[in-house]
Length: 389
Image (cartoon, rainbow, N blue to C red; front, top):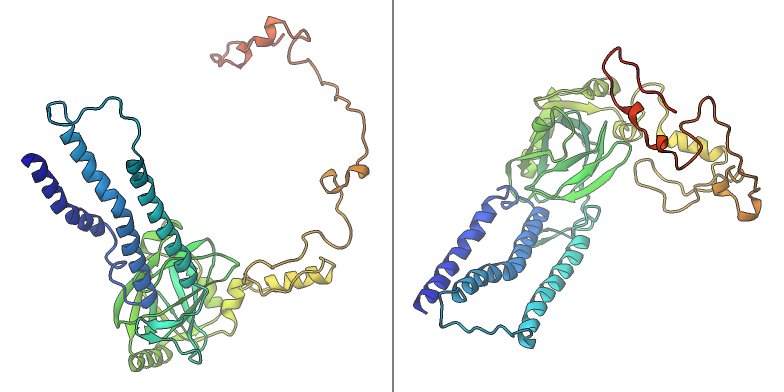
């Protein structure tokens, strides 16, 4: 009995160490957030892990305890070969996991809506509510091969692989991609959001601490993926204004021709700064018409509607799929049996097309030559291939 008690005590002491070992495997930036959204996401990790450990830790401990207590050499343990049911034991076995699943489900449902990236923030920090009248700082993000382009449309500047943000101010990111699907990930600020060509995704986030952090691509996108990282800088308002002024002074303008050069694949790109940005450049990137003489997606859809493409809800290119509208043009029903009613399909006799040349085998289904696969076997060069009968 003393040995049993000693083992239980040792396992109880080792349980916190196992939790710390699991936490050490996580990226340190995830567990050290600098923004309120990342802080809430970290808390979700803690709460979810604790709820799951309420089952995992006791099961692991009891597995060892039962194996030791009911070992063959322990003559004092109760031996009941006819045991088949215990109502109290079944109640514990099923009720505890069920309650934890209900708690995890409720937590997931509420946090999914609360931390929706398209939803504007209702607070800047745990102690500071967001002002509805305060406009967010807008940043347009483009994932390139293999670098990040950040456009500040309200400030008229752009940067490559460096993102500076004022602390305690809500930021709205509008994101797209030039070539392939990618993932924008700044773990100290918010979670991962996908960027896709021809579409626009949105993220609302905030930084609450000044400092230098790192962002990255979290979706494999080719040879330069490992170095597709950017510098994330948190500054106070005065420092951010000085940074903006410095970018405007030393940066060259970013126009369509410069963007097309920037769009070409390159690795390990040092930060670049542009003191001016061509108007509506981000919109043209989303609509995939930066190249001269290339029609934009909105123009193509407008021509389609004008040509009788059916009544569809108007939409801005890249904002998502239309909420309604038919996919069948209004000019008439397409041809083909799949689009016809049963009474419109004309039945015709089934006529087998005559075979050309020698048939693949004898017409007698029971003939053994129909099973002869020797003509498929490889032969040595110069050896005639077995014929087909």
